[in-house]
Image 1 (cartoon, rainbow, N blue to C red):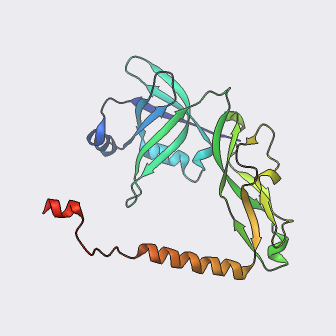
Image 2: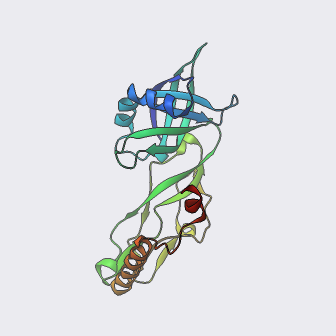
Image 3: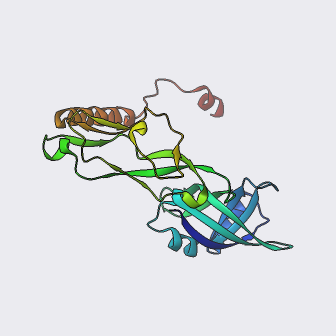
Length: 223
């Protein structure tokens, strides 16, 4: 079920990159809570404490009770994470977008899916298990939010697949995905190798530098 975590935050005034840099220099992370009746609420929290709480866990399945120190009052909000932004080079947490929820109203969340068991098509027929999807979109009450959904692939044979419509979800949880969305399939090793070669070739082609035969209008203008 849902992972519930308490964090402490405080309202913040400053806006813009300069204010955000100052907050990070003080060991905190700027964030915004969306979805409330009073509009977006800018807050900040201690980065180290937050990362310690979420380390190794799927943040899609976390419900946070944020205790907020405001200007005129102290209060709390139940939220989920909508987006976490990291520096791509230094892996530093830059910003977090939260979304306020009500514990008695359903929410829609992407939840990770994992395979369970050894597929017949792999252990007896020499195939490979292809993870066509890594998550599915579900709807449930916050208290019923699972950390992940395990799907049994034991009976899957070579050439067979599992789609969303084939999965029996736990009580209180329903899928809002396309029922025909592919989740798992057993493919031939030769086919998998051919697909890998094609994928590498495509990535290589995309990585080739652009050859400029003439100056772009903007460049000519700025010279």
